[in-house]
Length: 56
Image (cartoon, rainbow, N blue to C red; front, top):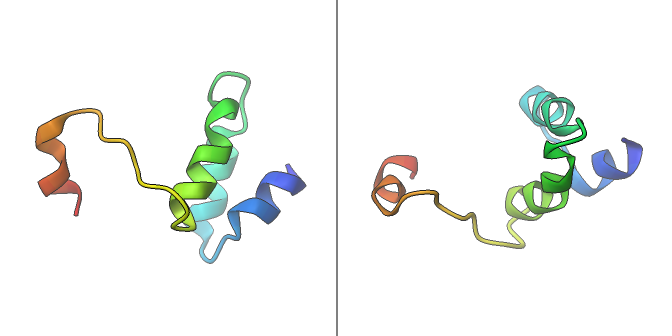
């Protein structure tokens, strides 16, 4: 958990809430991708092509 927290570099309480929600056996594999997107190192993947305009 501490390693994931260091990689995430949280700057608000919502970041910590997101990490706690991801820190479960299934979603845990998404923590590195979440950290990369949060820190601007990677682009987010849209699940539908129409959602991009709504998500900002």
